[in-house]
Length: 190
Image (cartoon, rainbow, N blue to C red):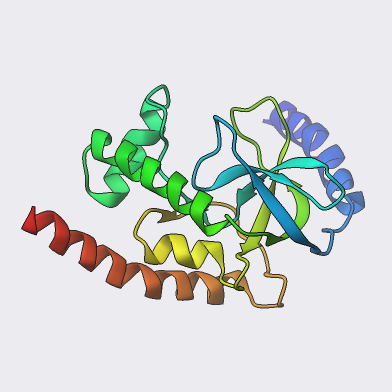
């Protein structure tokens, strides 16, 4: 037992020291005039963006997850299909709709707000979490949820306007209910 405690202590002490000296979270930075750049691997919640300085960056939305479009991600597709209560094939179709929705919503220059927090994924290229506002000031997450093409999911953060993520998530859930009801009505009419 003493050896286990010593081993555990030996592992935890450096981790706690690191946590105490870890840099504080960065404040949000705002980038206006961003341009959506079409790329094969863009989807509804992760896409390439050209910033005003012509730098290309991949951003991933906080708080939402659109279904995958590529069948190679069978485990994710099954999880996403279960969330929507649909088949995996239907989830892939929703993924295509979400991707097209985002592309259209970002057809005009838009705003990115990011803290440069890495959003890990299967890509070898770095991508960063962001909040996105369309050219007319609409929150892309809210638009995706209202359209019924995303699940509420993922990393949380206080918002750039100071709102707590719990307040924001409650708003997204309010928007999700009518979208789900509409989706069920459309499916039952088909």
